Each structure stands twice: as structure tokens, then as C-alpha cells.
Length: 301
Image (cartoon, rainbow, N blue to C red; front, side):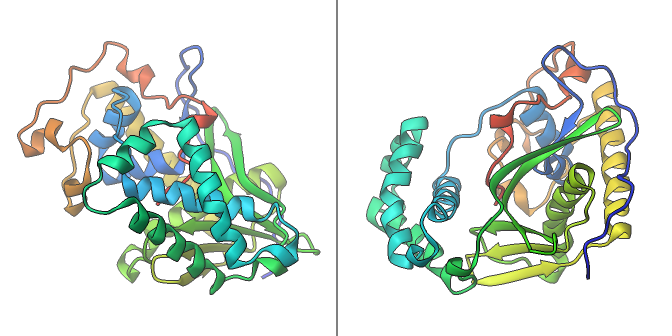
């Protein structure tokens, strides 16, 4: 389909923010609330830290290597060049977050050598899906933010390609495996979220949303239209209304699923016999996700 221009959508008003905070939502936090309102509370209101995990660190490393590979001239973007970037990019990540080195050293399930080998396999898999010598991204790790009548939508786009005719392709790297058909809609929500923000910012609906799954070397492509993005707008509006309601009532009830086994805060969840920390008095305002660029998840795997 050809790029579509239209009047950018609007979303309902939000409550007044605290200084330094805004009514804001990223795809990661939206997914948190849809998965479990209590998880959203733990991350946004209680600001409970999550310990670094080898899988998350590997995802960050792979994203970093694929981003930096495009600094090289097209002809030099080879698997060997990508492999040579792994060490330097890891050192930069550790310099910024020293706890990553300690995490890897304490991971008894694998040696450091095998961990880096796993990252290398994911990077090599990418070359079977895309040819970087034929790509010239317009943007990499692009932070996007747009205001929708008082609600800020924001996030990071791994890669934005722009064709000579102006068509936009939004690309997101995933180090996991592609989802089953049952969970495809959840995966595409993040991409439609980005497309909605880009539509507001650039006045053009992206022609292609592309998810690159390195875990099993598969591509998922979707061409959105105006109806898709207006439906996404309505979904986000309803989601924000539910977040406001939970913040006002204090009802952040948990929603159990198989994902509970991977939750860092399971011990505090009443569904599993835990006790959450007391809600602060200003919880309704704290429910407004802080607009701090570094706090948006750059790699949402």
C-alpha cells in the first residue's frame, strides 16, 4: 500500500501532572498494565528495581551491535564485522552499568564464553533475514514522543527506513522466538503504537511494520492503515482510562498467568501469598509515568 496522510488522531485529556512528571505511556508500560495491573504499579508507582538478567543483557548487546554496524560503509557490514563489534559494545555497556559484569560472572547456568556465543548466533541469524549492505536506515534507536491532548506517547524505534518515495518502514529487533498466532496481536500492538506516534509526528502512516525475530530467524510484516491506527488510539485511550481508575481507587489487582513464573516481584504478589508495599499517599499522581528518556525500555523483548 502507498503511504497515507491524514489528520492526526487525538486522545482524551489526562490529570494534571506533578512537576517533572507527565501523563505518559510507553509500549512497555502499556503491555505491563495489560498483562497485570499490579506489575504496572510495582514498576511505575513503587519503582521496584528488577535485577539484570542474562537474557535482557544479551538482548541489549545484540541491539547495540546491530545499531553500530550501520556506522560502517555498506560494503563492510559483514558477519565478521558484526562479530568484531561484540566485545567493544559489551565493554561500553558494562562501563555504563557495572552490575552487568557481576551478573554475568554470577550466572552459573553458562560460562561467559557460551553467553557471548549465544549473542553471536543471534547476530549471525540476522544476516539470513536482511542484507545490511543494501540498507541505509534513516534513523536508529530513534526516540519518538508525541502529545495526544495531554497524554504523551513515547518509545524507542530500533530502526526507521525511508524509501525514495517517502514510505516509512518501522523495524524492531527481537532476540526471542516469533509468537504463535494466538499472541501475534500482542506483538503487533507495540508496532502499531510506534506507527501511531510517527503518524502524529510526520503526518504519514508507515507502510510497513517489521518485527525481526532472531531466536528462530523469522520476519513478521504488517501493513497498517488508518483504521488500524484509529483502533489502536481507542485501545490506548481505554487503557489510560483504566490506569487512571486504578490509580484513583488504589485497586491494582493482579492478573495471574504463566508469565508470573518470570516476574521479578512474584514474592510481593498477594496472588502468590505475598504482601505489596503500602501505597504512597500521592499514588494517583505517581501513576503518571515519568517522562525521562533513559527510562523508556530501548529493547523490549
